[in-house]
Amino acid sequence: MKKLIILTLGFICFNSLNAQINETDDYVEFDDRKNIVHGVYFGFGGHYGRMDSEDTFLATMKLAYVANRQLEIGFAFTGFYNDRPNTQPNLFDGKDVVLFGGYGGFHIEPILFGERFISISFPTLIGGGIVSYRGIDTLENEDIELQEDDFDNFFIVEPGINILYNFSRYTQLETGFRYRFTSNYNLSPFKGKGNINGYSIVIGLKVGIFNMGRKKKIKDNF
Picture 1 (cartoon, rainbow, N blue to C red):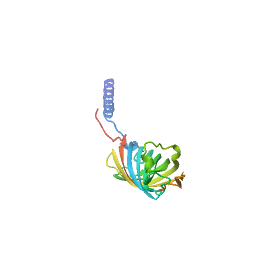
Picture 2 (cartoon, rainbow, N blue to C red; picture 1 turned 90 degrees about the vertical axis):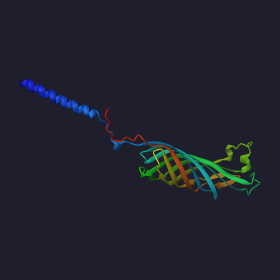
Picture 3 (cartoon, rainbow, N blue to C red; picture 1 turned 120 degrees about the horizontal axis):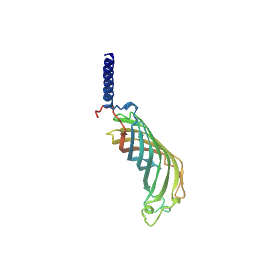
Picture 4 (cartoon, one colour; picture 1 turned 30 degrees about the horizontal axis):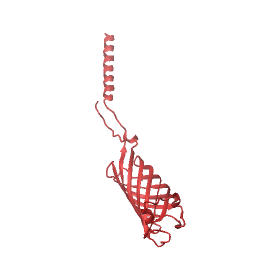
């Protein structure tokens, strides 16, 4: 009789334990606090500023990885163009003279309040570029090919500040301000030493996914 009671109690305990295990297996929990949110985007935009004392238009493209909506790391490339009346017809062809070129490099951007609709970031570009100074007729003449000697290179550091508008997990608008610190170029005999230091006002759009990998704490019955 005692053996029967012991066996019965053991059977009941086993069934109870097994039921608890099965019930636990029916649910999966993800802890969102320990999950890092990843993102990647392609960005493009326009700048307005001044180079060599002239109004200048710039266009930028970026490709970057976003970590936890707190830090961007990637690459950025910018082209620029301005013109002014030709006051040296003995050196340049055409009625206008054009300053043009481009620069690119490593892009890093710490972000504050990345989870909010409006956030603030501090982008910095570190890299290099090339610049040239030519008459408009020379550039428009298809029979003339620019050579390596027609350009000079420079080093650039471009810090700034952005206000970011997080419209959705796929799009983000940025507006901000940049300042270029560059080394000198030398375009003799067309132009002596100079630089493209100066400010620019920025507006751009980022398109991608800004919160890949986010997992919410859920319970699901299998």
